[in-house]
Image (tube, rainbow, N blue to C red; front, side, top):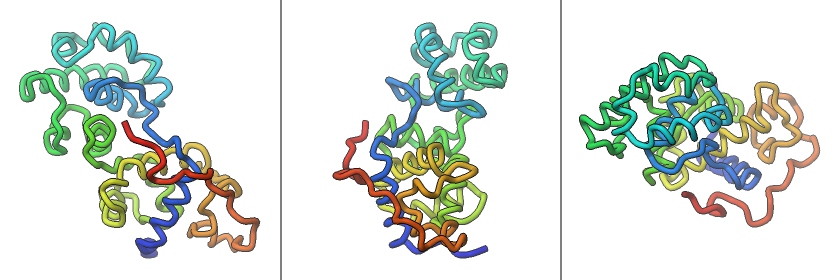
Length: 235
């Protein structure tokens, strides 16, 4: 297995991609940390768009942990059925709400250990909530981040925690959340399972593209003027 690309190259690649995707952000709709936590749990094996379709009705009926903690699965399942695995997800979000009430006065904790102790919450979900709703740097690693980072060569391996650690080591904390959003969006739009390399702003630095012997291809598309890692204020 080859070593990951050096820090300088990794940062250069992410600078290029941040310029190409200045709108990168979580695509889950939320107003509070509680809503983002529940929405992220529901997004497992589903799409953000599908989750965004069901959460308005869910949160209208159960607006916070105290209300959801009193629910039964039969109350929740019809509201989330289209996200898939709805029975298990209903149990998970109700159990999570009850633990929030019992252990954290109904509030979403701002610590990784406390978040991952909740039902259905792994490091990826915890990092999403920390980075987007609580202002604490986190680097969510989902299937898109795994695929894109390995293909680019900026991290190597199929262990999400190892990839997270490698990328966090190479970047300042202030860039963690946005860099994850950038890789996710790049994976959804361009670096899909069958990549559209001709549309990638970092292809000349990409290990996969270089392996194709295509370094003499047309220059990579330019990033939008004025865009970059600091161009978009975070919520």
